[in-house]
Length: 427
Image (cartoon, rainbow, N blue to C red; front, side):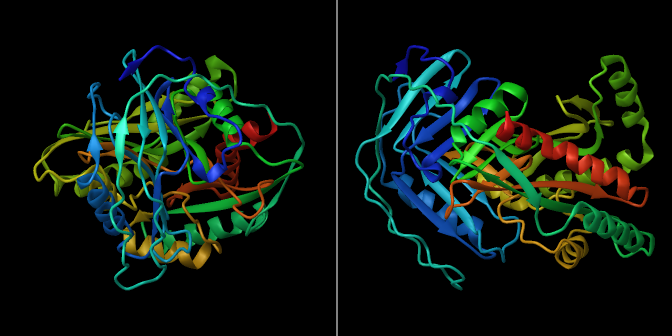
């Protein structure tokens, strides 16, 4: 049922809940938050998307649902995040929270999972994973009492991940040479940074700070993966498909007048326009297989975020085959925005040069409802909390490398992309 406005969505998340059992998907104060773990599954390998979708479909089929609100995000909801690579041990994680709060267009609601059995995880690396049986999910709506997020204390230090900044810059230079040799048109290279706090890191603090500083992004938390992505991989609502493509970046200076000049230069940059064109083309081609029509603007616009500016294009279409939002996300992943062009060659180069497992960084993250409608972003500007040590977190940033890329500039861009998470951790 509809409820009265309880206040800031993210501040309703209660304390004392393990990070793996907190879920958020919030932008500009609207979206979904959840806590508790009524049901969950992990999948892995090349079939991780299909296995996850089959598990959700089987659960929904047995759900007893009362939905008086009937907005996107009401009724049965599952949050999910997926590894970038099918070979990553991180796999995919889907979580059905016990409590979900939602806010959209001035309407607030609460969903409660009343009866459910805990499920076992699917075996890793199975050729044909045996998924858990459907769980008995009954949903109802009830009033909510707001709970404010705590503010933990403690310092945090950062150390290099798989590569130092200097080593990563050399890797970028090597990639530029490969592009010059004609092996690949574009490749996206990522780096990681390790954070170690004096006290356990509260994901509620991170999401609250990210939402405050980066309100135009989608602030997410799924099974310990926390971040604020500016990139919507795909949204599906009543047959309408939309995707926001970002590629081509410039760092902001804090001087508004200077930043306007930088935005104009970004819009004219042949290097950035080339990188952006690859990303848009890959998304449009993938969506075309699922849509009766596709609308792709002729030129990108400049998206202004607090720390950087991106070239952005919003692609839209109408589905033809009734596929789910997760199926669409699977068909789009990995896009040129996180992999490169051609995809297979760029992916091989990433495996050769990056020297690390991306885990669930750069994979789809978001939510899906019973009808298959939902929203899936790309897990960017994010960090993965260490499940074995709540004081540790691994941050990620990536840059698209093309023929005109400068390794020094790409390193600076990666540092700018680390700012949201570093700032949220240090305050």
